[in-house]
Every structure is written in C-alpha cells, then in structure tokens.
Image (cartoon, rainbow, N blue to C red; front, top):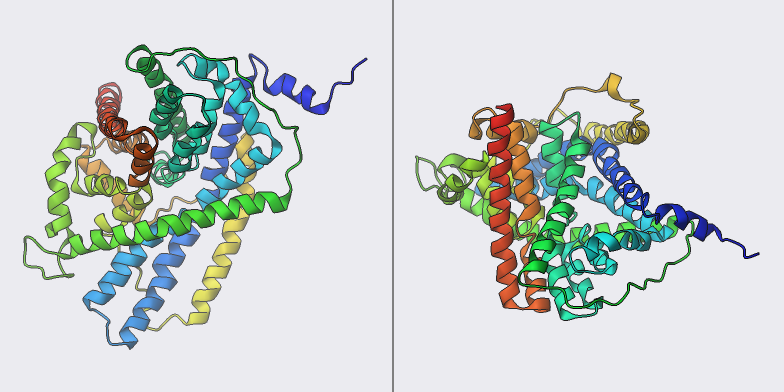
Length: 464
C-alpha cells in the first residue's frame, strides 16, 4: 500500500475544491490583522520619535549654526523631516507585511494559492499561474508586471498586466492603515482587508469584461504546476527576505519621496496670495494649494474635494509612498518644538525613545491574540490621536459636509484603483506597449473616480 506523504495530506485540505478559497482568505485575513494590529503598536512610537526628539534636535543644531527661523529650517523640518518622517512611521506596517508573506512563501503555500485560484482565473480566460504575478503585486506592482513574462502567450501577458495594478501594493497599505485607524478605529483591520478584497473583485470583473470584448480567450492548455513540498521556514530565510524587501523599499522609495517632498515643500513655500513671503506664508495661500484647488472640484462628488486631499492624490501619481508625506505637509502638521528651549536634556529624550519602544513592544505582543478574537489590550486602550490624524479627520469632515468616514472610504477606494506609480507605468509600457499603457492610466483613473463617487453618493443616501 502506497504511503501518503504529509504534503499530500495537507494538500488534500488546503487545495480542496470547497475549502481552498476560504483557507486562502483566512490566511490573508491573518496577514492583514498582523499589519494593522500588531504593527500598529509601533506607529505612535515612530511618529513621536520623528516629530519630537529628532525634529527638536535638528532645530537645535540649525539654531546653533545660525539658521534657526530661516527658510533652511523650514526646508529641513517642514519639508524633509515632515515628509519622509510621515513615511517612516509606516515602516513597521510594511515590515510585518513582508514578514508574513515571507513565512507563507517559505512554507510552500503560495504555489497552492495559485492552484486554488485556477478556477477563478479560468473564468476570466487566464490560467491559475497568472495569479502568481498578482500575488507579487501585493508587494510591488513593478516586479509583478515583469513577472508576467513567465506566461505562455502575449494575450495572457496583456490581460494579466492590465489586472495586476488592482492588487494593493505595499505602498498603498500605509494609506489604508492611516485612514482606517482614524475613521474606523474599532474595525481598521476589516477596512484594510476590504480594500484588498475589492481590488481582487474588481480585477476579476474587469477580466471578464476584457475577455468578452478586446481580449477574447483563444485556447489554453491544462494547468500544470509544480508543488514544492511543505517545509518549516527558517528564521534566517524569513529575516533575509523580510529585511531585503524592507531595505529595497527604503532605498528605492527614498529618492522618490525626498524629491517629491522637496517639490511639494517648494510649492507650499511660494505665496500666490495673501501677505506672506517665501517659506513664511499661510499654506492656504501657497502655489500648491492654488494648483490643487483648481483640480479639487473634480472630487467634490466623492466627498473629498479639498485641496489638501486632492494634492495628496496628485503627488500619488509619482508614487503612493508620498501620499501620506504630502498629507503631513498639506494639513499643516508642524514638528514638535518641545526641546527647543533646552529644558529637555538629550538623555531624557533618548530615554523616552527607549521606554516608548519597550511599551510599543508590549502592546504588539498583547495584540497577537486579537488575531483570533482575544482582546488583551482593550481595557488599556486610550483615545489618542496624532496631530496628523486629527487634522485629516477635521479636513475630511469639513470637505464632506459631516460624512468624513464615507469620504475617507471613497478616498481609500480611489487610492486602490488609480495608477499605482510612474515606475509601474514605465514597466507596463516596456512589457505591453504604449497603447496599453495609456489604456491602463486612463481606464484606472476613470474607474477610480466612478467607484469613489459611487461609494460616497450611495453611502450618504443610505447612512446620511
């Protein structure tokens, strides 16, 4: 009698016709609970470190150099630190996402996920292995587009490339987490998970539409996939993949973020109305507010027709990593100046960082049982928010006429569906041509606007 291996026994469950997809969705739910609840414990710590001790020490240094109160201080503190710092706040979120995905990859489960999705993918005229580039897209759209080279024919490559951008890349995740934490504090994980599910659903529906119109299916050979045996991941392997991806994000996104934030700061420093001067003008009177204000009426039906939200979306065309950085600048969040008078010793600030990290670690550990519904931290939860969160909440409430949560949800949907970044646009052009690149840009942006408007308008009629 043939011996059934452990891998075969596990596959009988995780690739089961009826259980496969629920198991896949359950594992994805765990991943996003980790990124929202466990990683979320470190968000305030990083934010306080950047906006507090780091900013105040830089201000003290600039003052000692005779640059205090000048445009240089504004450039460094309000531009570089406020912009890049707003992104660094969410490095723990991306780190946890990469950690969870590395664990699933090393176990051998990701190949099973593609197999499980084979039936759904065939419904839109693709094979299950087309889902592998889409899985890569949860990390970054650019390598996901390049991963379509492994597909058998040009038609499959085109269709998969058109659908990949709807998978929520890691750069979108911080935006979901920020707005989910502000407007859906008790259900942030559900809000984030819903964005990922919506992206998959939109990709499948659009795939059906394209299959029946401009990209009809021809003929597919049976799906043949090699399933690696299950194995226990090693700490070294998981750390290598997690750290390399996090480091790549910081290295590749860092230059884009820095340049974009400097451009945004410059536009905000130039007065076009009022009585302000360069680097000393009310943000509402700046060139950035003026340019964004021209476009803002387009988003009024979606509930976020303010120049601040519009400016964040415009900068997001460069890269989604800069959306929050632009928000930090647009909503007028200033760095803390608690250490400028010298009352706080350097040692005290260092100690506050260390003790804050310790408390964040404890909170993260307490959040782990919450993945399965056991809440150990609720009794100690405090209703606190950062200055950025409070400013964003007030801005969305005002722009939406008191329907801030619906406007935030519409904003998240727009972030999900419109063009991921200029790097992905370049990759799409290189892989499937200029015609399809423009179809992707125009189609995604139009769809994003329609869906965002639908969410807000229907929502206000039901709940408003």
